[in-house]
Image (cartoon, rainbow, N blue to C red; front, side):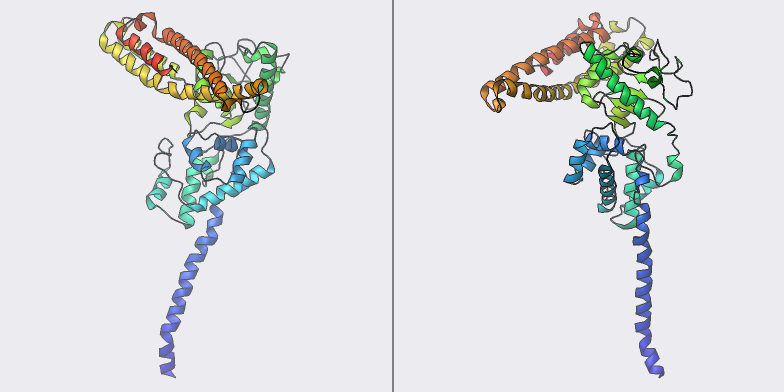
Length: 415
């Protein structure tokens, strides 16, 4: 009897060991679900959908490459302004949770400009391949990239005041509609101020954000931004002092360029009517600073340091030339490419309507498009040259450094 017991001891110990191992693993997998997103954790599905479809953002580009074809079609079909359909919201939830478990989303280059918490950095260092650590890492990365759209695991990180945000969204939708109607009645010209939309196109109450404690008091917004006629809570980016820079930014960034901002909800209305929140994953979502306004800041600092005679030294002129190349000229090809794509999209239906479908596949059709492209490039060159003259001054453009900038501009905008 004793021998039987002794003989069974190794088997019993092995069985207990297996049970302990299984017991240690079961909580890991069952607890993983608590780190997945819920519908409530998608705080702003509309803004998230807009950003996922705008794949110029590095993080969105990374995610979009891993999304299923079904949700990609849903994103393309979303107008960016209305409430996302239940089908789209459910698809977002399903796809996000699938990505949380599919593998690490961390890419050093993609997340280089996004501030990550110490906890997230510790998880990155662990380089988890599966289980709870992987899901927590990916959840933390997404919450850091889309802080207004996705809830973080820590409740302290989600203490956002969203009072009145739905009313604010509706205000921005009405402002978009009012702007469209204004432009239709005024030869596609934008109002100088949002107050010009009222009362014909917009009730004046639509200019007030419910989260604005100042009730649109002038002087609360940034310099030269307060509407001179009516109380207004919103920052209008096409106001006289910013219009030229904003039009240039529009050419560079396309229809996602913000035209109206609510600083209280960090909510933006784009030129095309899409609504999205600020966020660290893309500078354009947060800032209206263009290449030319950045150049202006640089020149202002030079004047403050060297006085009004700062152009008299070659060293300073070389600094200005280098800054112009870095802040303006290096973005030029990107802007031209966007303009050419826009031209093609606009010209194609007109050409097909007049000359028949398939015209662009013919030598004649491509020749017509080439002529249009050359004309537009000439217009862009003239506009940019005018802006360079406005910012740098005629005196600088006559110098050796200024002439070299104009030559570079001519080469970059040539067919």
